[in-house]
Image 1 (cartoon, rainbow over the protein chains, first blue to last red):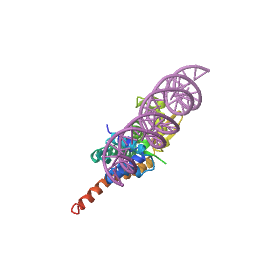
Image 2 (image 1 turned 90 degrees about the horizontal axis):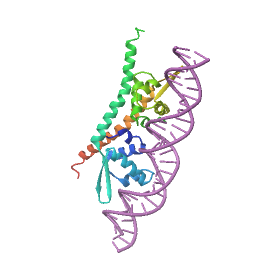
Image 3 (image 1 turned 90 degrees about the vertical axis):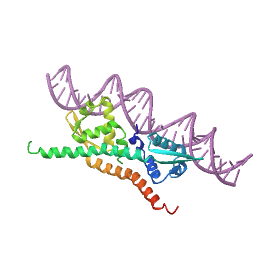
Image 4 (image 1 turned 180 degrees about the vertical axis):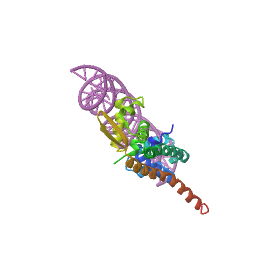
Length: 104
Length: 104
DNA sequence: TTTATATATAACCAAATGGTTATATGAAAT
DNA sequence: ATTTCATATAACCATTTGGTTATATATAAA
């Protein structure tokens, strides 16, 4: 369901994740820290919300965003185990190669 | 230069990375392990090559692909430190909150 | 009550993504 | 020499991405 790879594909979204992980931010806080338009930021927020990495809270005319920490943590762990495999495979392949040197 | 986030955005590309990390594969090995067309695989390979996460070697009519381990390792470490920050910030924010409880 | 501010949404655009089919090229095997 | 197999490339298509401007709506402040 949650596609963290899609969420983190854009550097603006990665920066938003870092911002809201430090503290809750309103949409205009976020808009102010980039040089793109408010609707463009809105679309990035929509993707992060869609992937459930952000939570929003409405207070009057303000909209506060914060990290959905449990989901982010879970998805990030999954990512690490998926990508970690790539390097582990490499090591396993090397190990196998070394162990079978004499047989060639 | 290398955009690992782009490279890993697609599940097919992630599986290719895992495959070639275990051992060198020809393009047709790779094509055989998916149910999409050869040109579609070719495009995924082109993206992985463009992002320098793969190396290719030509032997006769075969094209062998392998992981560009140093680049992958480096880029993956960078990714981890960038995304790791998100969770560290969260913890730092919590720590700060706890330390300043009495002052409110 | 008017005005200013925060957010939402629509319409548009260019480029990238992820796939297809058809076909060309080049090397190996019969 | 012909056929077969691996790879490359072209042309096409739909969808997504990442942006824009213009405008609407809703709340807060003057």
